Image 1 (cartoon, rainbow, N blue to C red):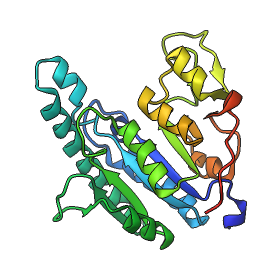
Image 2 (tube, rainbow, N blue to C red):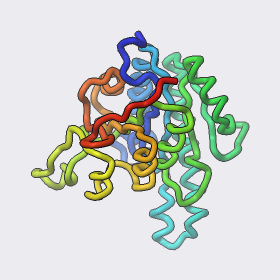
Image 3 (cartoon, helix red, strand yellow):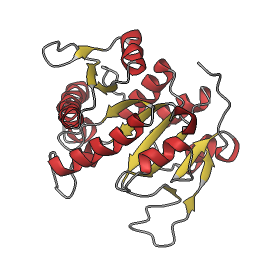
Image 4 (tube, helix red, strand yellow):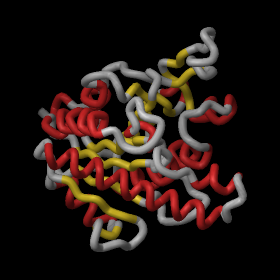
Length: 250
């Protein structure tokens, strides 16, 4: 089945909000189960899958700092929220018979393994899904930046970012009916236009290392599987006009 894959090692970036479903806060178990089943499909195809998950459904450090909380403390609280989400996703994956490991950038051995790059890669080689929690372990860095960093460290072929819309638009398509969808766009255009793909640090890191990003709608059935196959789903962010950079095979 691996021969049918365009991307064999994938870093899936999930926002904390993706776990809420229709709720205004917290974790919706049906939504997490749906995500787990979608991940299982691509694992069954032979893909190696790592996940970086946010914590915005529980706590957002930036918002708390705006309201007067000291930024570093607020960010550490946000990192702990990502660990809660990682454990919820791990539980859902293992209920669907997908072997999973959680690795945390903040040491909490009773709950998760510490992040060790070579160990994470070994898990992937053994067909285990690896969930990276607690961001980079540093305040002032978002989980977008953590996703770009971990993707580079493990030699991922692509970052696939799950969102509530079906790609990258020139404006918020919910608020602006005239917003234009891009099928492909360059890293530089994302930065110049200030588009909400990932934060500028993450985009710059991907640009410097020629790592493509595919932005797609998480709610679409089989979308993760189809992205892995290289089907035209969502928007690809890459080099010139979104062209995927050539990567050396591992």
